[in-house]
Amino acid sequence: MVVIKKICCIGAGYVGGPTCSVIAQMCKDIAVTVVDVNAERIKAWNSDQLPIFEPGLQEVVESCRGQNLFFSTDIDKAIKEADLVFISVNTPSKTFGIGKGRAADLKYIEACARRIAEVGIGNKIVVEKSTVPVRAAESIRRIFNANTKCNLNLQVLSNPEFLAEGTAINDLKNPDRVLIGGDETPEGGKAIQALKSIYQRWVPENKIITTNTWSSELSKLAANAFLAQRISSINSISALCEATGADVEEVAHAIGTDQRIGSKFLKASIGFGGSCFQKDVLNLVYLCEALNLPEVARYWQQVIEINDYQRRRFAARVIGCLFNTVTDKKIGLLGFAFKKNTGDTSHKTESGGCLENADRGISRESSSIYVSKYLMDEGAKLHIFDPKVKKEQIIQDLSQTNICDDDPDRVSRLVTVALDPYEACKNAHAIVICTEWDMFKELDYEKIYKAMLKPAFIFDGRRILDGLHEKLQRIGFQVETIGKKVTELIPFTASKETSRNDLQAPAAKKLKI
Ligand code: UDX
Ligand code: ADP
Image (cartoon, rainbow, N blue to C red; front, side, top):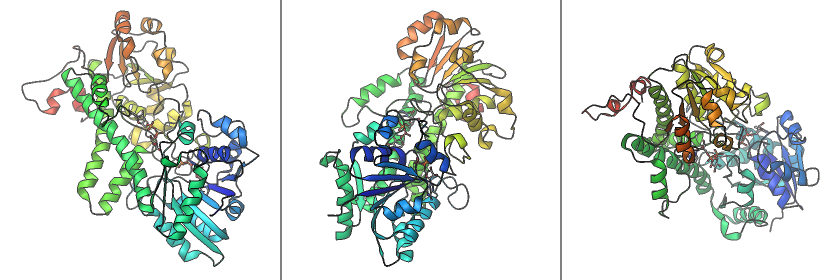
Protein backbone atom coordinates (compact mmCIF):
# COMPACT_ATOMS: atom_id res chain seq x y z
CA MET A 1 0.00 0.00 0.00
CA VAL A 2 1.42 3.38 -1.05
CA VAL A 3 1.25 5.82 1.87
CA ILE A 4 0.83 9.50 1.07
CA LYS A 5 2.63 11.80 3.49
CA LYS A 6 3.12 14.89 1.36
CA ILE A 7 0.87 16.43 -1.25
CA CYS A 8 1.73 19.20 -3.68
CA CYS A 9 -1.07 21.00 -5.50
CA ILE A 10 -0.04 23.03 -8.54
CA GLY A 11 -2.54 25.87 -9.00
CA ALA A 12 -3.96 27.89 -6.10
CA GLY A 13 -7.22 28.80 -7.85
CA TYR A 14 -10.90 28.07 -7.26
CA VAL A 15 -10.32 24.34 -7.51
CA GLY A 16 -6.85 23.82 -6.00
CA GLY A 17 -7.20 26.23 -3.05
CA PRO A 18 -10.46 25.01 -1.48
CA THR A 19 -9.88 21.34 -2.37
CA CYS A 20 -6.47 21.18 -0.74
CA SER A 21 -7.57 23.22 2.25
CA VAL A 22 -10.29 20.65 2.96
CA ILE A 23 -7.87 17.74 2.40
CA ALA A 24 -5.45 19.35 4.88
CA GLN A 25 -8.21 19.82 7.44
CA MET A 26 -9.36 16.22 7.08
CA CYS A 27 -5.87 14.65 7.02
CA LYS A 28 -3.78 16.27 9.74
CA ASP A 29 -0.98 13.73 9.16
CA ILE A 30 -0.48 14.81 5.55
CA ALA A 31 1.50 17.96 4.70
CA VAL A 32 -0.28 19.79 1.88
CA THR A 33 1.55 22.50 -0.06
CA VAL A 34 -0.38 24.54 -2.61
CA VAL A 35 1.89 26.27 -5.13
CA ASP A 36 1.31 28.80 -7.86
CA VAL A 37 3.30 30.91 -10.31
CA ASN A 38 1.20 33.88 -9.22
CA ALA A 39 3.05 35.32 -6.21
CA GLU A 40 0.26 37.77 -5.42
CA ARG A 41 -2.28 35.00 -5.24
CA ILE A 42 -0.05 33.00 -2.90
CA LYS A 43 0.46 36.09 -0.75
CA ALA A 44 -3.30 36.46 -0.50
CA TRP A 45 -3.71 32.81 0.53
CA ASN A 46 -1.21 33.49 3.32
CA SER A 47 -3.15 36.56 4.50
CA ASP A 48 -6.53 37.31 6.09
CA GLN A 49 -7.86 38.39 2.68
CA LEU A 50 -8.10 35.13 0.76
CA PRO A 51 -8.05 35.58 -3.02
CA ILE A 52 -11.48 34.02 -3.44
CA PHE A 53 -14.80 34.49 -1.68
CA GLU A 54 -16.23 31.16 -0.59
CA PRO A 55 -18.44 30.67 2.48
CA GLY A 56 -16.60 28.67 5.19
CA LEU A 57 -13.25 28.72 3.37
CA GLN A 58 -11.56 31.18 5.73
CA GLU A 59 -12.32 28.96 8.73
CA VAL A 60 -10.97 25.85 7.01
CA VAL A 61 -7.77 27.62 5.95
CA GLU A 62 -7.24 29.12 9.40
CA SER A 63 -7.70 25.74 11.06
CA CYS A 64 -4.62 24.27 9.37
CA ARG A 65 -2.53 26.96 7.65
CA GLY A 66 1.04 26.87 8.97
CA GLN A 67 0.45 23.44 10.53
CA ASN A 68 -0.08 21.03 7.64
CA LEU A 69 -1.30 23.46 4.98
CA PHE A 70 1.16 25.72 3.18
CA PHE A 71 0.92 28.15 0.29
CA SER A 72 4.14 28.76 -1.59
CA THR A 73 5.71 29.87 -4.85
CA ASP A 74 8.52 27.34 -4.52
CA ILE A 75 6.99 24.97 -7.03
CA ASP A 76 10.03 22.77 -7.63
CA LYS A 77 10.64 22.07 -3.94
CA ALA A 78 7.00 21.11 -3.37
CA ILE A 79 7.01 18.81 -6.42
CA LYS A 80 10.26 17.17 -5.35
CA GLU A 81 9.06 16.40 -1.84
CA ALA A 82 5.54 15.25 -2.73
CA ASP A 83 4.26 11.68 -2.94
CA LEU A 84 1.21 12.93 -4.77
CA VAL A 85 0.87 15.97 -7.06
CA PHE A 86 -2.50 17.46 -7.97
CA ILE A 87 -2.55 19.45 -11.20
CA SER A 88 -5.22 22.12 -10.61
CA VAL A 89 -4.31 24.73 -13.16
CA ASN A 90 -6.76 26.52 -15.42
CA THR A 91 -7.82 25.05 -18.76
CA PRO A 92 -9.42 28.00 -20.57
CA SER A 93 -10.82 27.77 -24.08
CA LYS A 94 -8.24 28.48 -26.75
CA THR A 95 -8.19 32.09 -27.88
CA PHE A 96 -6.50 31.48 -31.21
CA GLY A 97 -5.60 28.74 -33.65
CA ILE A 98 -7.45 25.49 -34.33
CA GLY A 99 -10.46 25.12 -32.04
CA LYS A 100 -10.41 28.82 -31.08
CA GLY A 101 -13.12 29.64 -28.55
CA ARG A 102 -14.03 25.99 -28.04
CA ALA A 103 -11.13 23.58 -27.57
CA ALA A 104 -9.51 23.52 -24.14
CA ASP A 105 -6.08 25.08 -24.01
CA LEU A 106 -3.86 22.57 -22.27
CA LYS A 107 -0.71 24.69 -22.23
CA TYR A 108 -0.76 25.12 -18.45
CA ILE A 109 -1.29 21.40 -17.91
CA GLU A 110 1.57 20.62 -20.26
CA ALA A 111 3.84 23.11 -18.47
CA CYS A 112 3.10 21.34 -15.18
CA ALA A 113 3.75 17.89 -16.67
CA ARG A 114 7.10 19.05 -18.04
CA ARG A 115 8.02 20.60 -14.69
CA ILE A 116 7.19 17.42 -12.80
CA ALA A 117 9.27 15.33 -15.24
CA GLU A 118 12.12 17.83 -14.93
CA VAL A 119 12.40 18.17 -11.16
CA GLY A 120 10.64 15.08 -9.78
CA ILE A 121 12.44 12.16 -8.14
CA GLY A 122 11.24 8.86 -6.69
CA ASN A 123 7.68 7.51 -6.92
CA LYS A 124 4.88 9.96 -7.51
CA ILE A 125 1.21 9.87 -8.26
CA VAL A 126 0.16 12.70 -10.55
CA VAL A 127 -3.52 13.57 -10.38
CA GLU A 128 -5.44 15.62 -12.97
CA LYS A 129 -7.90 17.74 -11.03
CA SER A 130 -8.46 20.33 -13.72
CA THR A 131 -11.27 19.70 -16.21
CA VAL A 132 -9.67 18.31 -19.33
CA PRO A 133 -10.77 16.79 -22.63
CA VAL A 134 -10.90 13.01 -22.77
CA ARG A 135 -7.47 11.42 -23.14
CA ALA A 136 -5.58 14.41 -21.75
CA ALA A 137 -3.98 11.99 -19.28
CA GLU A 138 -2.55 10.22 -22.31
CA SER A 139 -0.72 13.42 -23.31
CA ILE A 140 0.61 13.82 -19.78
CA ARG A 141 1.83 10.22 -19.81
CA ARG A 142 3.56 10.72 -23.14
CA ILE A 143 5.33 13.82 -21.86
CA PHE A 144 6.44 11.84 -18.84
CA ASN A 145 7.59 8.86 -20.90
CA ALA A 146 9.58 11.09 -23.23
CA ASN A 147 11.21 13.16 -20.47
CA THR A 148 11.36 11.14 -17.32
CA LYS A 149 14.68 10.27 -15.77
CA CYS A 150 15.33 6.71 -14.57
CA ASN A 151 14.99 7.73 -10.89
CA LEU A 152 11.40 8.92 -11.34
CA ASN A 153 8.35 6.65 -11.46
CA LEU A 154 5.01 8.32 -12.21
CA GLN A 155 1.41 7.12 -12.19
CA VAL A 156 -1.28 9.36 -13.71
CA LEU A 157 -4.82 9.48 -12.30
CA SER A 158 -7.90 11.51 -13.16
CA ASN A 159 -9.84 12.91 -10.19
CA PRO A 160 -12.14 15.67 -11.46
CA GLU A 161 -13.63 18.18 -9.07
CA PHE A 162 -17.38 18.75 -9.02
CA LEU A 163 -17.56 21.67 -6.59
CA ALA A 164 -19.77 24.64 -7.41
CA GLU A 165 -18.90 28.20 -6.48
CA GLY A 166 -20.62 29.43 -3.36
CA THR A 167 -21.05 25.91 -1.97
CA ALA A 168 -17.47 24.67 -2.50
CA ILE A 169 -16.73 23.79 1.11
CA ASN A 170 -19.93 21.83 1.60
CA ASP A 171 -19.48 20.15 -1.80
CA LEU A 172 -15.98 19.10 -0.75
CA LYS A 173 -16.92 17.92 2.72
CA ASN A 174 -20.12 16.14 1.67
CA PRO A 175 -19.63 15.22 -1.98
CA ASP A 176 -22.28 13.32 -3.95
CA ARG A 177 -19.37 11.24 -5.17
CA VAL A 178 -15.62 11.27 -5.58
CA LEU A 179 -14.46 10.00 -8.94
CA ILE A 180 -11.05 8.44 -9.46
CA GLY A 181 -9.92 7.13 -12.83
CA GLY A 182 -6.69 5.27 -13.43
CA ASP A 183 -4.82 2.65 -15.40
CA GLU A 184 -6.15 -0.86 -15.34
CA THR A 185 -2.72 -2.20 -14.32
CA PRO A 186 -1.47 -3.35 -10.88
CA GLU A 187 0.46 -0.05 -10.53
CA GLY A 188 -2.60 1.93 -11.61
CA GLY A 189 -4.68 0.02 -9.06
CA LYS A 190 -2.21 0.85 -6.27
CA ALA A 191 -2.25 4.53 -7.18
CA ILE A 192 -6.07 4.57 -7.17
CA GLN A 193 -6.07 2.91 -3.73
CA ALA A 194 -3.60 5.48 -2.39
CA LEU A 195 -5.76 8.41 -3.50
CA LYS A 196 -8.90 6.64 -2.33
CA SER A 197 -7.39 6.22 1.13
CA ILE A 198 -7.19 10.02 1.42
CA TYR A 199 -10.86 10.59 0.61
CA GLN A 200 -11.93 7.64 2.75
CA ARG A 201 -11.05 9.68 5.83
CA TRP A 202 -14.33 11.56 5.39
CA VAL A 203 -16.20 10.26 2.36
CA PRO A 204 -18.22 7.01 2.70
CA GLU A 205 -16.75 4.18 0.65
CA ASN A 206 -19.87 3.78 -1.49
CA LYS A 207 -19.50 7.36 -2.70
CA ILE A 208 -15.99 6.81 -4.06
CA ILE A 209 -16.27 5.64 -7.64
CA THR A 210 -13.29 4.19 -9.45
CA THR A 211 -13.21 3.90 -13.24
CA ASN A 212 -10.76 3.79 -16.09
CA THR A 213 -9.02 7.08 -16.83
CA TRP A 214 -11.07 8.01 -19.92
CA SER A 215 -14.43 7.41 -18.22
CA SER A 216 -13.38 9.68 -15.38
CA GLU A 217 -12.25 12.45 -17.69
CA LEU A 218 -15.39 12.22 -19.81
CA SER A 219 -17.69 12.05 -16.76
CA LYS A 220 -16.66 15.53 -15.70
CA LEU A 221 -17.47 17.03 -19.09
CA ALA A 222 -20.66 14.98 -19.33
CA ALA A 223 -21.82 16.03 -15.84
CA ASN A 224 -21.46 19.71 -16.67
CA ALA A 225 -23.09 19.20 -20.06
CA PHE A 226 -26.08 17.42 -18.48
CA LEU A 227 -26.51 20.17 -15.88
CA ALA A 228 -26.31 22.88 -18.53
CA GLN A 229 -28.73 20.90 -20.70
CA ARG A 230 -31.31 20.80 -17.89
CA ILE A 231 -31.16 24.57 -17.58
CA SER A 232 -31.53 25.02 -21.33
CA SER A 233 -34.41 22.53 -21.31
CA ILE A 234 -36.36 24.40 -18.64
CA ASN A 235 -35.50 27.72 -20.24
CA SER A 236 -36.88 26.49 -23.56
CA ILE A 237 -40.06 25.53 -21.71
CA SER A 238 -40.13 29.02 -20.12
CA ALA A 239 -40.48 30.50 -23.60
CA LEU A 240 -43.45 28.22 -24.22
CA CYS A 241 -44.96 29.24 -20.89
CA GLU A 242 -44.71 32.92 -21.73
CA ALA A 243 -46.46 32.28 -25.03
CA THR A 244 -49.26 30.14 -23.60
CA GLY A 245 -50.13 31.12 -20.05
CA ALA A 246 -48.51 28.12 -18.37
CA ASP A 247 -46.17 29.00 -15.51
CA VAL A 248 -42.69 27.52 -15.68
CA GLU A 249 -42.37 27.28 -11.88
CA GLU A 250 -45.51 25.15 -11.78
CA VAL A 251 -44.32 23.05 -14.69
CA ALA A 252 -40.87 22.59 -13.09
CA HIS A 253 -42.49 21.53 -9.82
CA ALA A 254 -44.89 19.17 -11.56
CA ILE A 255 -42.22 17.42 -13.63
CA GLY A 256 -39.61 17.57 -10.86
CA THR A 257 -41.71 15.44 -8.51
CA ASP A 258 -41.16 12.54 -10.89
CA GLN A 259 -38.21 10.87 -9.22
CA ARG A 260 -36.76 9.96 -12.57
CA ILE A 261 -36.55 13.63 -13.46
CA GLY A 262 -35.79 15.09 -10.01
CA SER A 263 -36.37 18.63 -8.80
CA LYS A 264 -32.91 20.17 -8.92
CA PHE A 265 -31.51 22.42 -11.64
CA LEU A 266 -34.94 23.19 -13.04
CA LYS A 267 -34.94 26.86 -12.21
CA ALA A 268 -35.75 28.95 -15.26
CA SER A 269 -33.47 31.95 -15.51
CA ILE A 270 -31.91 34.43 -17.87
CA GLY A 271 -29.48 31.65 -18.81
CA PHE A 272 -26.58 29.92 -17.14
CA GLY A 273 -23.28 31.69 -16.60
CA GLY A 274 -20.16 30.76 -14.68
CA SER A 275 -16.78 29.58 -15.66
CA CYS A 276 -17.58 25.98 -16.53
CA PHE A 277 -20.83 25.26 -18.32
CA GLN A 278 -20.29 27.13 -21.56
CA LYS A 279 -16.59 26.29 -21.68
CA ASP A 280 -17.12 22.59 -21.02
CA VAL A 281 -20.07 22.16 -23.38
CA LEU A 282 -18.11 23.88 -26.15
CA ASN A 283 -15.17 21.67 -25.36
CA LEU A 284 -17.45 18.63 -25.66
CA VAL A 285 -18.80 19.89 -28.98
CA TYR A 286 -15.30 20.40 -30.27
CA LEU A 287 -14.28 16.95 -29.15
CA CYS A 288 -17.25 15.38 -30.95
CA GLU A 289 -16.41 17.23 -34.13
CA ALA A 290 -12.78 16.18 -33.89
CA LEU A 291 -13.91 12.57 -33.44
CA ASN A 292 -16.17 12.86 -36.50
CA LEU A 293 -19.41 12.74 -34.54
CA PRO A 294 -21.21 15.75 -36.07
CA GLU A 295 -24.71 14.74 -34.95
CA VAL A 296 -23.58 14.50 -31.33
CA ALA A 297 -21.75 17.80 -31.66
CA ARG A 298 -24.89 19.52 -32.99
CA TYR A 299 -26.99 18.08 -30.17
CA TRP A 300 -24.79 19.62 -27.47
CA GLN A 301 -24.27 22.84 -29.40
CA GLN A 302 -28.01 23.42 -29.10
CA VAL A 303 -27.62 23.72 -25.30
CA ILE A 304 -25.49 26.80 -25.90
CA GLU A 305 -27.83 28.14 -28.58
CA ILE A 306 -30.81 28.03 -26.22
CA ASN A 307 -28.77 29.75 -23.53
CA ASP A 308 -27.93 32.60 -25.90
CA TYR A 309 -31.54 32.71 -27.07
CA GLN A 310 -32.79 32.99 -23.48
CA ARG A 311 -30.57 36.00 -22.79
CA ARG A 312 -31.68 37.74 -25.99
CA ARG A 313 -35.30 36.81 -25.40
CA PHE A 314 -35.30 38.32 -21.91
CA ALA A 315 -33.72 41.55 -23.11
CA ALA A 316 -36.23 41.71 -25.96
CA ARG A 317 -39.07 41.31 -23.48
CA VAL A 318 -37.78 44.25 -21.45
CA ILE A 319 -37.59 46.37 -24.58
CA GLY A 320 -40.99 45.19 -25.81
CA CYS A 321 -42.68 46.06 -22.52
CA LEU A 322 -41.03 49.47 -22.42
CA PHE A 323 -43.04 50.39 -25.53
CA ASN A 324 -40.37 49.07 -27.87
CA THR A 325 -37.77 51.61 -27.01
CA VAL A 326 -35.26 51.87 -24.21
CA THR A 327 -33.14 54.55 -25.83
CA ASP A 328 -31.98 56.98 -23.13
CA LYS A 329 -34.23 55.31 -20.57
CA LYS A 330 -32.75 54.63 -17.16
CA ILE A 331 -32.89 50.97 -16.18
CA GLY A 332 -31.91 49.73 -12.71
CA LEU A 333 -30.15 46.43 -13.27
CA LEU A 334 -29.95 44.46 -10.03
CA GLY A 335 -27.35 41.71 -9.89
CA PHE A 336 -24.27 41.21 -12.00
CA ALA A 337 -22.77 37.98 -10.59
CA PHE A 338 -23.64 34.80 -12.49
CA LYS A 339 -25.38 33.47 -9.39
CA LYS A 340 -25.80 34.50 -5.77
CA ASN A 341 -23.18 33.96 -3.07
CA THR A 342 -20.32 34.64 -5.40
CA GLY A 343 -18.61 37.85 -6.44
CA ASP A 344 -17.51 36.17 -9.60
CA THR A 345 -18.94 37.26 -12.93
CA SER A 346 -16.65 34.59 -14.37
CA HIS A 347 -13.26 33.74 -13.11
CA LYS A 348 -11.33 31.86 -15.73
CA THR A 349 -8.26 33.88 -16.32
CA GLU A 350 -6.24 33.31 -19.40
CA SER A 351 -3.19 34.43 -17.48
CA GLY A 352 -4.23 32.59 -14.37
CA GLY A 353 -4.26 35.89 -12.50
CA CYS A 354 -6.65 36.59 -9.66
CA LEU A 355 -9.56 38.93 -10.07
CA GLU A 356 -7.92 41.88 -8.39
CA ASN A 357 -4.85 42.06 -10.59
CA ALA A 358 -6.58 40.63 -13.55
CA ASP A 359 -4.84 40.52 -16.85
CA ARG A 360 -7.91 38.57 -17.81
CA GLY A 361 -8.60 36.85 -21.03
CA ILE A 362 -11.85 35.30 -22.12
CA SER A 363 -15.00 33.79 -20.79
CA ARG A 364 -16.94 36.44 -18.97
CA GLU A 365 -20.03 34.39 -18.86
CA SER A 366 -22.50 35.95 -16.42
CA SER A 367 -25.80 36.30 -18.27
CA SER A 368 -26.07 39.83 -16.80
CA ILE A 369 -23.27 40.86 -19.14
CA TYR A 370 -25.22 39.76 -22.19
CA VAL A 371 -28.54 41.20 -21.02
CA SER A 372 -26.66 44.47 -20.41
CA LYS A 373 -25.17 44.26 -23.88
CA TYR A 374 -28.53 43.83 -25.59
CA LEU A 375 -30.01 46.72 -23.62
CA MET A 376 -26.98 48.90 -24.39
CA ASP A 377 -27.33 48.00 -28.07
CA GLU A 378 -30.70 49.78 -27.86
CA GLY A 379 -29.23 52.80 -26.07
CA ALA A 380 -30.50 52.09 -22.54
CA LYS A 381 -28.81 53.84 -19.64
CA LEU A 382 -27.92 51.11 -17.19
CA HIS A 383 -27.51 51.72 -13.47
CA ILE A 384 -26.08 48.48 -12.17
CA PHE A 385 -25.97 47.32 -8.57
CA ASP A 386 -24.48 44.10 -7.26
CA PRO A 387 -23.67 43.49 -3.59
CA LYS A 388 -20.43 41.64 -4.37
CA VAL A 389 -19.11 42.44 -7.84
CA LYS A 390 -16.74 45.37 -7.83
CA LYS A 391 -17.25 48.41 -10.04
CA GLU A 392 -13.99 47.87 -11.95
CA GLN A 393 -15.05 44.31 -12.69
CA ILE A 394 -18.41 45.38 -14.10
CA ILE A 395 -16.81 48.04 -16.27
CA GLN A 396 -14.15 45.62 -17.43
CA ASP A 397 -16.67 42.92 -18.32
CA LEU A 398 -18.84 45.32 -20.28
CA SER A 399 -15.88 46.85 -22.07
CA GLN A 400 -14.83 43.64 -23.82
CA THR A 401 -14.81 44.09 -27.56
CA ASN A 402 -17.52 41.49 -28.14
CA ILE A 403 -19.82 43.33 -25.71
CA CYS A 404 -19.28 46.97 -26.61
CA ASP A 405 -19.03 46.28 -30.35
CA ASP A 406 -17.22 49.02 -32.21
CA ASP A 407 -17.99 51.72 -29.68
CA PRO A 408 -15.45 51.74 -26.83
CA ASP A 409 -17.02 54.88 -25.29
CA ARG A 410 -20.43 53.41 -24.90
CA VAL A 411 -19.75 51.93 -21.45
CA SER A 412 -18.77 55.33 -20.03
CA ARG A 413 -21.78 56.86 -21.77
CA LEU A 414 -24.38 54.27 -20.81
CA VAL A 415 -23.24 52.52 -17.63
CA THR A 416 -23.25 53.74 -14.05
CA VAL A 417 -22.37 51.42 -11.21
CA ALA A 418 -24.61 52.23 -8.26
CA LEU A 419 -23.59 51.93 -4.63
CA ASP A 420 -26.99 50.75 -3.47
CA PRO A 421 -30.13 49.35 -5.09
CA TYR A 422 -32.25 52.41 -4.28
CA GLU A 423 -29.84 54.67 -6.12
CA ALA A 424 -29.86 52.26 -9.08
CA CYS A 425 -33.67 52.38 -9.28
CA LYS A 426 -34.26 56.10 -8.60
CA ASN A 427 -35.93 57.78 -11.59
CA ALA A 428 -35.73 54.53 -13.53
CA HIS A 429 -38.32 53.28 -16.01
CA ALA A 430 -37.69 49.69 -15.04
CA ILE A 431 -35.91 47.34 -12.65
CA VAL A 432 -34.31 44.29 -14.19
CA ILE A 433 -33.33 41.52 -11.76
CA CYS A 434 -30.48 39.43 -13.12
CA THR A 435 -29.05 37.66 -10.04
CA GLU A 436 -31.05 35.95 -7.32
CA TRP A 437 -29.41 37.73 -4.35
CA ASP A 438 -31.63 37.31 -1.26
CA MET A 439 -31.39 41.02 -0.46
CA PHE A 440 -33.46 41.82 -3.57
CA LYS A 441 -36.45 40.10 -1.95
CA GLU A 442 -36.23 42.38 1.05
CA LEU A 443 -36.00 45.79 -0.59
CA ASP A 444 -38.45 48.53 0.34
CA TYR A 445 -40.40 48.38 -2.92
CA GLU A 446 -42.85 51.12 -1.87
CA LYS A 447 -39.93 53.50 -1.52
CA ILE A 448 -38.47 52.31 -4.82
CA TYR A 449 -41.83 52.69 -6.61
CA LYS A 450 -42.29 56.26 -5.40
CA ALA A 451 -38.92 57.24 -6.82
CA MET A 452 -39.48 55.60 -10.24
CA LEU A 453 -41.01 56.90 -13.46
CA LYS A 454 -44.47 55.53 -14.22
CA PRO A 455 -45.53 53.04 -15.40
CA ALA A 456 -42.90 51.36 -13.25
CA PHE A 457 -41.82 47.91 -14.43
CA ILE A 458 -40.06 45.08 -12.64
CA PHE A 459 -38.58 42.30 -14.77
CA ASP A 460 -37.77 39.29 -12.65
CA GLY A 461 -35.23 37.21 -14.55
CA ARG A 462 -34.73 34.88 -11.60
CA ARG A 463 -38.19 34.23 -10.21
CA ILE A 464 -37.21 35.58 -6.80
CA LEU A 465 -40.22 37.86 -6.37
CA ASP A 466 -42.91 35.19 -6.88
CA GLY A 467 -44.21 35.55 -3.30
CA LEU A 468 -44.39 39.33 -3.67
CA HIS A 469 -46.27 39.68 -6.94
CA GLU A 470 -49.60 40.70 -5.44
CA LYS A 471 -47.95 43.14 -3.09
CA LEU A 472 -45.88 44.65 -5.90
CA GLN A 473 -48.91 44.96 -8.13
CA ARG A 474 -50.85 46.60 -5.32
CA ILE A 475 -48.03 49.11 -4.96
CA GLY A 476 -48.48 49.85 -8.65
CA PHE A 477 -45.68 47.94 -10.38
CA GLN A 478 -46.13 46.09 -13.62
CA VAL A 479 -44.40 42.80 -12.86
CA GLU A 480 -42.93 40.76 -15.69
CA THR A 481 -41.51 37.38 -14.83
CA ILE A 482 -39.49 34.87 -16.76
CA GLY A 483 -41.60 31.84 -17.67
CA LYS A 484 -44.95 33.50 -17.04
CA LYS A 485 -47.31 35.00 -19.57
CA VAL A 486 -46.44 38.44 -20.77
CA THR A 487 -48.98 40.97 -19.46
CA GLU A 488 -51.42 42.42 -21.94
CA LEU A 489 -49.61 45.74 -22.24
CA ILE A 490 -47.12 44.17 -24.59
CA PRO A 491 -47.68 45.07 -28.21
CA PHE A 492 -47.75 41.60 -29.65
CA THR A 493 -47.75 41.35 -33.41
CA ALA A 494 -49.21 37.86 -33.43
CA SER A 495 -51.17 37.07 -36.56
CA LYS A 496 -52.92 34.01 -37.99
CA GLU A 497 -49.54 32.90 -39.19
CA THR A 498 -47.86 31.06 -36.37
CA SER A 499 -44.32 31.51 -37.47
CA ARG A 500 -42.06 32.05 -34.48
CA ASN A 501 -41.06 35.55 -35.43
CA ASP A 502 -44.67 36.60 -35.71
CA LEU A 503 -45.18 35.80 -32.07
CA GLN A 504 -42.68 38.34 -30.98
CA ALA A 505 -42.65 41.98 -30.26
CA PRO A 506 -40.83 44.12 -32.85
CA ALA A 507 -37.91 44.63 -30.50
CA ALA A 508 -37.52 40.91 -30.28
CA LYS A 509 -37.32 40.74 -34.04
CA LYS A 510 -34.70 43.42 -34.01
CA LEU A 511 -32.60 41.33 -31.63
CA LYS A 512 -32.83 38.44 -34.10
CA ILE A 513 -34.31 35.94 -31.66
C1 UDX B 1 -20.93 24.31 -12.03
C2 UDX B 1 -21.30 22.88 -11.58
O1 UDX B 1 -22.49 22.93 -10.79
C3 UDX B 1 -20.16 22.25 -10.80
O2 UDX B 1 -20.47 20.90 -10.48
C4 UDX B 1 -18.90 22.28 -11.65
O3 UDX B 1 -17.80 21.73 -10.93
C5 UDX B 1 -18.58 23.72 -12.06
O4 UDX B 1 -19.72 24.29 -12.76
P1 UDX B 1 -20.96 26.70 -10.90
O5 UDX B 1 -20.69 27.22 -12.25
O6 UDX B 1 -20.14 27.18 -9.75
O7 UDX B 1 -20.81 25.10 -10.88
O8 UDX B 1 -22.46 27.05 -10.54
P2 UDX B 1 -23.91 26.37 -10.67
O9 UDX B 1 -24.55 26.45 -9.36
O10 UDX B 1 -23.86 25.06 -11.32
O11 UDX B 1 -24.66 27.42 -11.61
C6 UDX B 1 -24.24 27.68 -12.93
C7 UDX B 1 -25.19 28.62 -13.61
O12 UDX B 1 -26.45 28.01 -13.88
C8 UDX B 1 -25.52 29.88 -12.79
O13 UDX B 1 -25.55 31.01 -13.64
C9 UDX B 1 -26.90 29.60 -12.24
O14 UDX B 1 -27.63 30.77 -11.96
C10 UDX B 1 -27.51 28.82 -13.40
N1 UDX B 1 -28.62 27.95 -12.98
C11 UDX B 1 -28.40 26.92 -12.13
C12 UDX B 1 -29.89 28.17 -13.51
O15 UDX B 1 -30.11 29.10 -14.29
N2 UDX B 1 -30.90 27.33 -13.14
C13 UDX B 1 -30.71 26.29 -12.29
O16 UDX B 1 -31.70 25.56 -12.01
C14 UDX B 1 -29.42 26.07 -11.76
P1 ADP C 1 -9.53 26.80 -11.52
O1 ADP C 1 -10.93 27.28 -11.42
O2 ADP C 1 -9.40 25.64 -12.49
O3 ADP C 1 -8.94 26.51 -10.19
P2 ADP C 1 -8.07 29.33 -11.65
O4 ADP C 1 -7.84 30.21 -12.81
O5 ADP C 1 -8.93 29.83 -10.54
O6 ADP C 1 -8.68 27.97 -12.24
O7 ADP C 1 -6.69 28.88 -11.00
C1 ADP C 1 -5.66 28.24 -11.70
C2 ADP C 1 -4.33 28.64 -11.07
O8 ADP C 1 -3.29 27.89 -11.70
C3 ADP C 1 -3.96 30.11 -11.25
O9 ADP C 1 -3.78 30.73 -9.99
C4 ADP C 1 -2.65 30.07 -12.06
O10 ADP C 1 -1.71 31.08 -11.68
C5 ADP C 1 -2.12 28.69 -11.74
N1 ADP C 1 -1.19 28.17 -12.75
C6 ADP C 1 -1.35 28.11 -14.09
N2 ADP C 1 -0.29 27.51 -14.67
C7 ADP C 1 0.59 27.21 -13.68
C8 ADP C 1 1.87 26.56 -13.64
N3 ADP C 1 2.45 26.11 -14.75
N4 ADP C 1 2.48 26.43 -12.44
C9 ADP C 1 1.87 26.86 -11.32
N5 ADP C 1 0.67 27.46 -11.27
C10 ADP C 1 0.01 27.63 -12.44
